[in-house]
Image (cartoon, rainbow, N blue to C red):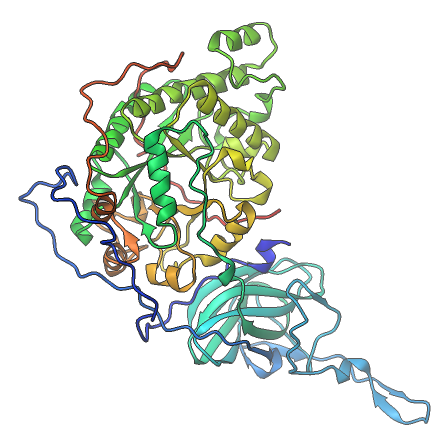
Length: 606
């Protein structure tokens, strides 16, 4: 089943909250507060910020009720230039010589048939005809007025035929809510948006294609798929020899999975400007400090400041997340982007099991011509990064480790050579870090984002998505991608939003039963203006304040409370000596202030 076709990037419709949901509200004081937390945050006592109330999780009370209605396109409000097309009238005679209408003219017009499922090809249109005449610029739309019997989530299925792939936008009560692409086989097919929330009464559903299609009808039925989302993830890490700090962090994350969304922010430099800006704006710090280590084979030593900043954040009670902007190990063109480097991962692949060999053994293979220069370059980079991660291990810092991000795409070199190469590199890195370097502080995050790039489930702990939307679009909960990813990896894995352009709507996340383990807001234009001040281009100030003060969100101070307020690691004066061979190179890493992610990402099952 093609999720791009059936799920079609539907988004929850954020309605005006009419009441506080009747379920019990989340209590952030589940464990006793410690008498004192000596190193909570790095703000001076003189610094003052505004105080904000706690916002309860609020959304209209949901009443589940089986329902189903069919709305013919010819009865909807048609945009300028659209027309209703009907088959020519044909008359035949029966055995007695009486004239009868053709089969096409006698199909039922508005009867709802629950046995007709999405992804169903329908041989004939229903009703009096279908609507056509849409423009390529999306200027013509059909608006259905539907009647929702209760406040609940609905599946909206459009019967569409098209000769070419056509992008379609869906607006609900004037808010752009979803987008999908039609099929191109000229057959009427149901394309379904799952779990769109509607309040009781009338709503307007507008379909705006960017190209000509044949639109037959809209079918609205109560949703059942969102109730399938579960939060019973396994707490055992993929690394059976994981260290205590990693186990404790994973225990915590699985314990509160589905109860809170953990807040996270990417820092562009060790100065933590973005985190301090969030504090000044909301009165709260994020629980997770994310960094993007930007390295190439000529520059690993510059990362020391960022690695040190990670350790400092952990000493203050926070959680550390790292990703790797790994420039390809090319001698001439180093870049993370495939178009800007001559390095090809396919040229590095080998059938020789090198994952747990020493550098001396691998160097020997290279000297004998048994592995390529590209393969040897990969190993050198992987081992150099192991030095950075070993530095954190020696300080007792667990790391949410997300390498090879957005692996399904072809824009980064690690995804550009196809899924086999991507999976080979993942397996190589996982085994080398886990078995050879014994990095027991890593919690592995798979960010392949496609069923085709799914690696061995025993080699990762969390599955995540990167989801970017244009500014001004309602971000909502992104429940449709949450559900699609859980269907791919299974309910035993935590599901997280590893990168986003906008802070997700916490109320909508609970309303839509899509409570991400955590989110990570990217930096740059997604948060600040040219002067480094807070920008409302993607997330309004009020939305950020409400998110960070929501009773459904977990911030740094609340995380420390739930952990008992204890000092999480000793303040080592110097690093412990490493016990692992060849965790070489310096413990420097890089600040990620030279890259910015711009991709919009969906879950793919092809």
